[in-house]
Length: 109
Image (cartoon, rainbow, N blue to C red; front, top):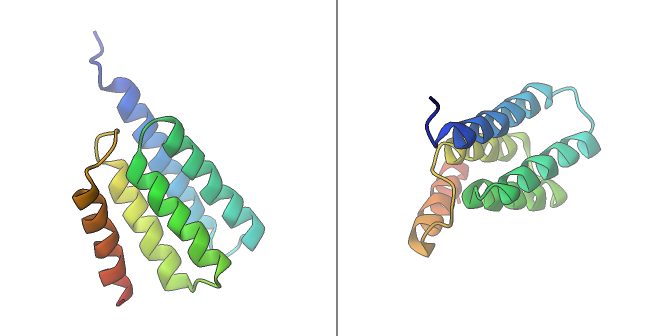
């Protein structure tokens, strides 16, 4: 018999799989394809309650729109993959701030 967490693990695998595929395609895909891939991940995360993944994907979209450099893109993709491992649902504001601060630290801001 399957546990209640199986659907969550399935979504986590879908999210991390899409992030990994996007990271692998990054050197060869057009910017429009990349942005579309990030938006797909953001919507999947939103639809299934992975609030931190959704927030990071949104921030990545903003960074790309502002001319984000490759290191920032990889940092956000790594953080999104890490965030997909967290349980779905809203995070306390302090936890969200800590996660975003970790990304800023990795970027040297």
